[in-house]
Length: 131
Image (cartoon, rainbow, N blue to C red; front, side, top):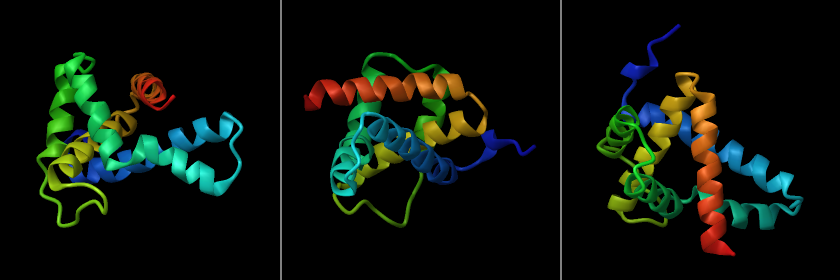
């Protein structure tokens, strides 16, 4: 087994982005939404760089993360990416990359329960701001 704790922030974010999106899609389809256009629009409330930056800032404010989790968030946030989000400034994009890196770290290190706990929290937070 590979030591995933040594991965750089962008590699962690790469997998974290995919994993988080799958959970969000599962959630939206589970709610009964079936129209692809509506699904895509609804997913944006959770998976856009702006949404992810908002969520991770709230997690940090509410001291939801362990010290170790914050290390992986910062590793992603501080990574120098050569691309940027279509609809976000560089700071928002970097913060969102940190969010994705944290999800990637939790997934790859098999901390599934903790990852799901944080994703559930994210879904609730987005629900509060979009209802």
